[in-house]
Length: 135
Image (cartoon, rainbow, N blue to C red; front, side):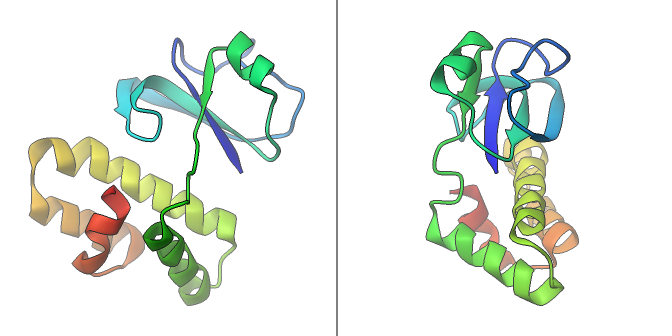
């Protein structure tokens, strides 16, 4: 899966290339800081195959690089796949959703109890994995 963040506008008709199969489109309620690209974005689009650098530039999309390069996050994805008998794509989506919720709700408030609650509810994991998701 190849994720591209829309840095100028929400993702909608005419705001992204349709040359590759789109897997998912997510728009945020408002522009928000995305640590994976180290800047604010309005949402993202996921493709099954990568688009070209020129296409990304033409549509003002920023690719997420090294999405699962962190070995600890890869390990969490593997745990979810084996435990829940799900695909890698589904496990990655669960990790992304949990991480997004942590970054938008628990991290800004500094509420560690909320962070542990989100981790338990979203992924059914112990607090030991919390730091791995946030790094």
